[in-house]
Length: 438
Image 1 (cartoon, one colour):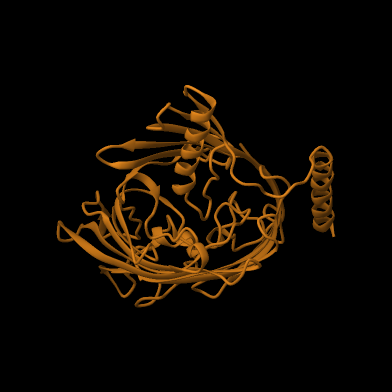
Image 2 (spheres, one colour; image 1 turned 120 degrees about the vertical axis):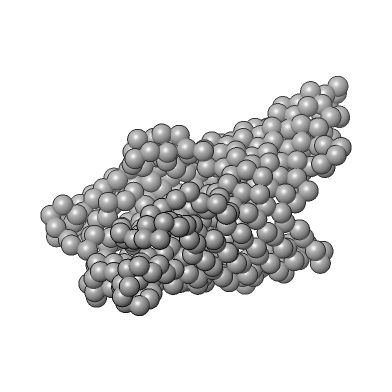
């Protein structure tokens, strides 16, 4: 009963705080994008025309999807709009309460659910503002390169939990279909997952940042898009005594093809693939060797009507831990063969997630829920009973845009982890969020 009393007090505190805040704000529906534009111009008429043009530049190059920022509220532009710089961001506060299992992670990651519950990990309360964001976006009109977009953003997730060390999320330049720099991995379909308070999101999703050179091209009147990229590899394996890690020598190669339909092409389906050539050293022979990793994914978003949206992705592969969130950073890209430790093998893995969003008041109030799971398969047996086998992630949430800048939300999460030996554990979290965009 104590844990439910603590939960009730936490929720009651938030309601009191939100009520105090709400009393000072007048509700209105989301309006058309109207940024404040600072411009060098000769007269009001010229300024109005130029402001409309620079607004269109930012609207046309805006990217939608998981954890993507809104258009900036403040834009500075030269008199001929050859250079425009937007500044924006948001302040985000998440308050969470873990019960019936508390994990040692600020995000809800089934892989990190403790398998043994004790007095130390029964409940946990957290308040976190480290996902607050700052970003810069520049749009440049180049005679040679056409419209050039430069984007960079940061949050405060660069160190241990609650240290608030700045972290560079992305920093890239984009022109004529090329993207060069640091961005969300090309394997990720940004519009295939719903919005969650939880910063991690569904455990079968693959939202991660990487350094890359990418090219994308649209055809069939922008209904079809193809893309290919070379990205920085990140390899984690279980080496044993017969193998050792070395520097990687080949980038990950990723390609995708997507097709969009419907009004404004709001529905789409996409197929993606990744190939990895992972290097390691054989201590027994004294030679370097490689393991081939590969993965395929089918993902999409279906806009059934203005009231209902569906999201999904399914991924399967061998040696692709960076491309499945629950396994990212785990030592399962490859492992030594339990039956013959002198041999190395890539590990098969797969996952899927599906979610639905019901728009009670489109762009103002919506409810969402979904299920996600990840599996690490056996291959010639397994290394130990405590080795991860399966993770589940279940969520339900509600988001409310009180104004065009202020968003309130509440969310429930349930997760479970099962190991190779059959042992299973679970965790629960309820979260509330307030976010103000600027």
